[in-house]
Image (cartoon, rainbow, N blue to C red):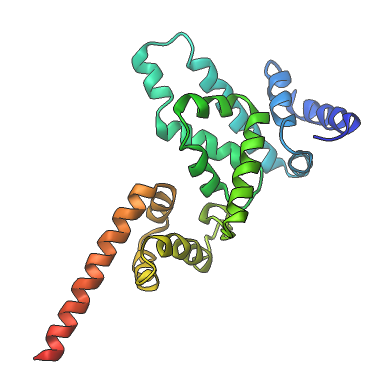
Length: 224
């Protein structure tokens, strides 16, 4: 963040808000949140729900860090599973309000598990990599908004646009039809396939097969 006075001011405000609920953890939580961009911190101070979510995510990251030490190999494997890392990383990246949380999370998860763990513990490093990933997306002209960053009502049109952009990369010839077929799935399933490239490819392949089967059936009926 720029400006020592701004940092001090924001730090004092955050500390005062966090202290009543998390007395013992206040210094750590304040320090973690201060590593976020000033605009995000200001927004959190004005939005209690957003601040509470940020605190919960910071607590989750701290808890994960504590639990990863002094545990059995089995417990350690569970605590740092890919799903767990993905969820924690997603929550932290979401605080940056990039509009591309889903995609950036996927990009950063391509790193080794140790590197991802480091991102969870070092918000300055995370911010640098988020900016780099966002720059890469912009250079690629990928400006579609993630499903997860849309409103709580999950506007079907926004979901469709996001899904279309992914499907188009896998099958440009049938992307419109396949997108329409996949949009018949419930939102939870759509969230899953949009966050998992392998699941998306399987879903697209199944839809393509069903589409080709329907076309063949139609051609047979017309020839009779």
